[in-house]
Amino acid sequence: MRMHRMTSTTARHLRRVVLQAAVDAGAACTGMSLDVFFRGDETDIEWRPRRTTALRICAGCPVRAACEELALRDGEGDPEADEIVRGGLTGPELAAARDAHAVRLAVAVDADRDTEGSRLDALMAERYVLATTSTERVRDGKRVPPTVVQLEHNERIRTLNLEIARTRTARRAQAGWAVAA
Image (cartoon, rainbow, N blue to C red; front, top):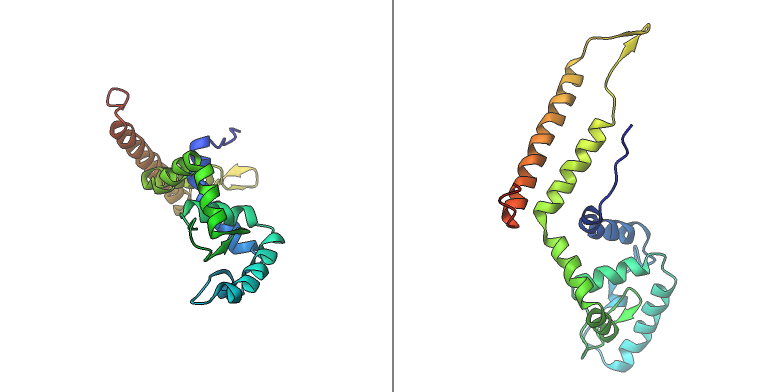
């Protein structure tokens, strides 16, 4: 049986989804009012205790790093304004981290915007699941004739193969690989 290997391109496309799923499933702030993490129209004296509370919550969060990366990808944080706590960092700290990781984040944001790449990854994932799911039936040691479900299953795999081929060809042509496409 052939094993599926995830490429670095596939991993980059799936990264945002994985990060968001991790935050949604395991953030320490789940169910809390998000007002704790965002500064309203208040003075520094009023904001500091809430900011400290937010930083404490983030410090013990099991998905802090994922939350931080999402905040960086989304461009959150202002170097001049202490208005947010996300991923265990304040606004100015997020801005400094974003500057320090500018090249890596630019590549990640481009991958997040690559909807064709994401679609290709989704098609390939669906094809993999279908291709590794057997619909063959055996009764008393003999193969049972294909059912409508099996025929539909096989037809969906053929359709996915065509969609994948078309999408790859279009992406290659768009990237200037006209000869290879």
